[in-house]
Length: 191
Image (cartoon, rainbow, N blue to C red; front, side, top):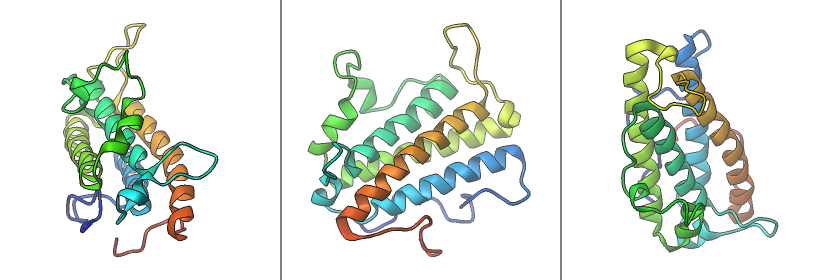
């Protein structure tokens, strides 16, 4: 892979981590960006074999994690936040028949496809979160309605994404270490 996945915008326009004295929305977005950046570093530069590598105790792969987190980005910040229909490839999947499709199908995707799906989903999410935050900050109401009739706020969707990335970046850390020994909490400053 020739570019860092997820670094689709200049570092000046994307927070690299939460600001020390930022607003609530800047802190939430900064925390999410830090998680995305660390996850991208853990997945960066691998070929098909690297993305399909598993540790003995798990069926997870970095390719599966890339595809899953692309889906999660679109689920939370495309469908739930904006109410838009899911973009391809998610819109063509029968989720009732194949609830784990993204995990299973990742093995058939090229590295370029997996990195591309994730980068594109992150770019959409950034734009949609930025627009919602500009309208009402963390209090922006999502289009999604819960079973009991409530609309979550942007803050909850961002917290859910931070939690999802935190869990899966831990998985990615273990898998990447088993591939080539790459360890660490933060990517290098020039990543």
